Length: 329
Image (cartoon, rainbow, N blue to C red; front, side, top):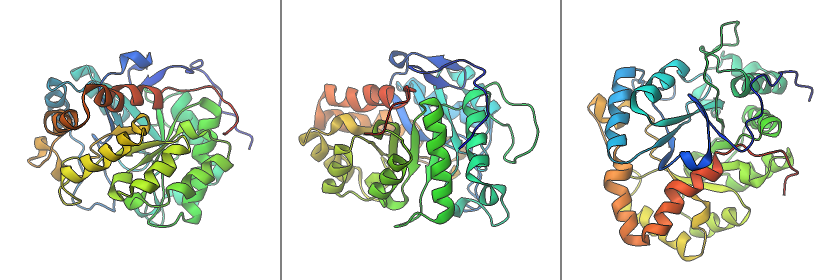
């Protein structure tokens, strides 16, 4: 694939790329590894949220409880707001890693340009976001780029299968990661298709430690999770406080089982607040503060401080650092 987007901001290898610029991995701190501050999707009617002041309010509250970084994984076409993310980071002092890339099919209407684009076009847009600045609009049009760079590549698969168009977008994500060393965070629908996603990305040359599988805790199969962790990929759990899926005690049991088998160095935690009803600033809950104020103390009582530190601090610092190109293993 011949991609001609020039690297104009220099190498980011060995750094974490936030919307206010690159930082050292040891500067990241306690991290919510999967969340949203702005989102708009036809798959979630009536659940849009795009208010900067409310985002600042929500993040400020979470920061008061110790949160230091958020991986904001709203991708292209779903209301991503680069300028808004910069404003929130500046107002709160919280590091924000923004996403490029694309979601699963359900989030794009039939006439959306993402569906009709070639792999080369999709990859080119990803590389512009990573190297030059994020596009302020959802469409493939000429416009001044925002000053912020994306720091992670988003991708997605459907329930129990990867569609033809999702495969195309995963291949484009792989090209973006290969060119830059940026990690890829992949939406797994109800925790399915984990091995298939890893197989596809590694077939395209992506190293296992550049792959983050999100939402696996919605399919709390310990044996499956251990198999995936043994392949060297990251597992990201994001249902704390989401009682409609299961009580926190069951998520804690899952984490405990992974720690017992020595797999805690593959785990990260987020909240994935992908609907306005989940935010305190919009009158809902559990709120962005839930991870540290409610879930983390229970995690600490189960695991002890070293394991908690590994999951909330050390693992995100490793997972979101851009790494040099090397053959997939």
